[in-house]
Structures are given as C-alpha cells and as structure tokens.
Length: 325
Image (cartoon, rainbow, N blue to C red; front, side, top):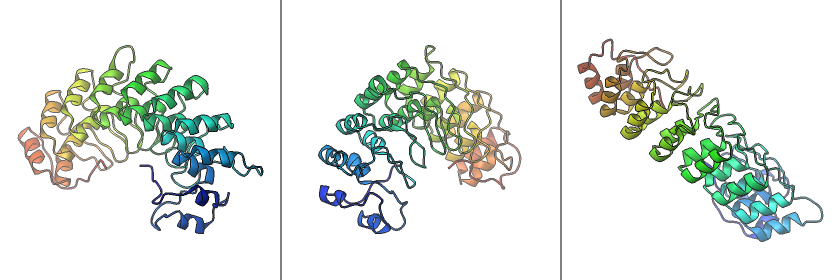
C-alpha cells in the first residue's frame, strides 16, 4: 500500500522544504519513527497533493531547483509525475510532461512503478489515455522487483475493466511475466482480488490469457491457486472450465498447489470442486513437501482436515506450516 503523509501542507511549508531534505524535514512532515522514510522533494509533494499553482511556482523558480525528473527516494518514493498519476491529478500530469518529465522513468524501490502503471492504479482513464496517446508511454514496461506490476497487471488488480480493455487495445501483453516476488500476471491479479468480470474478459479468445501461467518464484500463485485462496467459487469454476491445472505447483517460497490454498483457508466447497476435477489429494508442496492435510492442520482448519480425511487423504497431520501469506 502506498503510504501517505499524516499532515497537510500549506504552500509556504512546501516551499520552505530544502531541495535536499534533511532528517529534520522528514520529522516536520509528520512521519512516525516506525515508518519508512519517504524523501519527497517539494515538487513531488506538490504534485502528490495536486496543487497546480504551487507546481507552477516551483517549476518557474529561476534557480532551477525544482528538478522535474528528480528520482524517487525512500521505500515508497515517486517522481513528481508518478505521484501526480497515482493520485489522479490530470492537470498536474500535463504540466509536468510539458516541463520535460520522463514518462517512462522507473519508480521507487518498492514495485518500481512508472507513471502509466501508477495511473492505472489510480483508475484515472483520462490520464492513462493521455500518457499512451500523447506521451509515448510504454504500455509493456515490465514488472520490476517485488510487488511490481505491468500497467495491465495493475489495472486488473485494481478492478478497472475499462482500463483493462483500453490497454489490451493499445497492445498490452496479456501474458507478460510477473515480478519475481509477489508478482501476478494480469489473470492471476484479477483472480487474486475476486474480479470475475476481468477474469472472463482476459480469458476471451481474442485476448488469450494463459490460464496456467507459472507463478512468480516467491509468493506467487497461479490464477486457480489465487481464486482458491480467497474462496471465490465462481472464479474457481470459470478457471477449471477454461483448463486450469488443478495440480500445478506453486511458488518455491510461500506457495503451494490449489488444494493447499483451499485447505489453508478452510474453503471446503472449493476442496470438493478441486477433488471432483481430479486434484491429487496427497500431493505435496512447499520446501518440506507437505500435504493439503498438513496445511489445513497447520492453520487450525479442523473442518477442512476432517473433510480431507473422509475424502481419502492419508499420511500424517503434524509437521505442516502455513504456505501462503
């Protein structure tokens, strides 16, 4: 989640912030000691707040101190343009672009999301259209680092079907590779938040989402595993009908099969659906090679445990750990 500052700022307060903020500056901005430093420049702050008048003042400074392309700093940093896109300030976005803002600059440490990706997250279709039609934004800029997303993956996760359709029409790769840690393909992203409309949209033949795309290496899920984890029976059915592999392996770290995902959360109806679709009841997953039975026990899902036993699960109950965050 994108952190925000705890206090509002007057134009005078922002203008008083030095171009290179000091530690005292961060405290003055109201950051709590246990929060990540978000080392915003004055222009980044004004852009985040949507203060067009202040953005104009900063950009017109004779000393040129307001660097329109100052890089993001801190864990959740953004360039000025990325901040304006994330918070949906179209007028500020246009002004920054006219001042030379780099539309395709990478984002901050966490997620590395560029301007288009942040605009998709905000759900602002006008900004998305502007960046693609007039600014040569890269619709297929890759998902980077942990929690990174392509523009299409962001829109699918944010539940924005109109933006998803627009991006697909602009050439977005529906099967773009997910980020290495906690990444999601567009279909996996939609399934993970229970968005049936977008799941169905992506699976249309003209779009061709891969129902069995591999999960990211760490903390990843196939689309089916994601739907099983959140207990969305409708999406589980749609994915199985579309050919989802009920026995697909999960991530090498913090991952498991679909049956494990349902067992960990105690979704008995989904366990039944998976077994009817020929899920291997004794298949193992995770570094320790545990069964769905052990996964249910590890999370105290007694009803799921008993259901699996009655359905023929064998082997020990003890020794399991939680496979999914």
